[in-house]
Length: 234
Image 1 (spheres, rainbow, N blue to C red):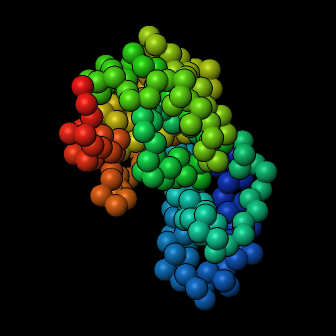
Image 2 (tube, rainbow, N blue to C red):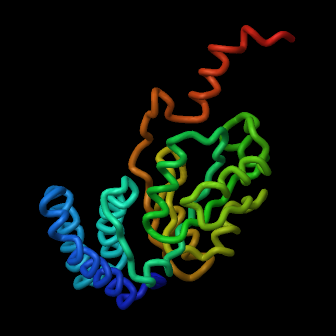
């Protein structure tokens, strides 16, 4: 089946980036020339693949270009005003998000650079299946914490029996996978295409970053045990 992303839609993304880039090219040239060069290369790739009829790869390229510009926005270096069309994109992200840490925030920030971020929080029963342990925080608490993150447009609990059901409800344009999620991009895209009749863009977050030695919730649990477990009286 054909992709649900139209040529006209990707062309609007390209035109929007060109407009925003034109407004800030002098600043970028003077302060971030290497970043400007990378953005232009992604823009060139996006045009190339669009002409070849590879809409999905074209969208990936333009999304990465937008993300590079957004990185300057998030560190306070650049004030950006994207065209309204950018809000049309729905971005889907799912995870357990147990003991929220900076790595989770970076993942959500990255995912939100592609559009409105819809986050699905794993149910307790599914968290046990995937991680082999009960989550430290119950699903209702994890959901409220995720809802409070400024990069999240909407958060909801997942389905206990069908992990793809929230995708059917949200119908995202882009699905973001975490670096350690075992399911492949091809499997996700194929299952969505089978169920919904269109193939979304599936992007994987590049890699986990360590923040003061912490990369995961498990690292936090180990640190707590090392420092405090011997102090707990049974």
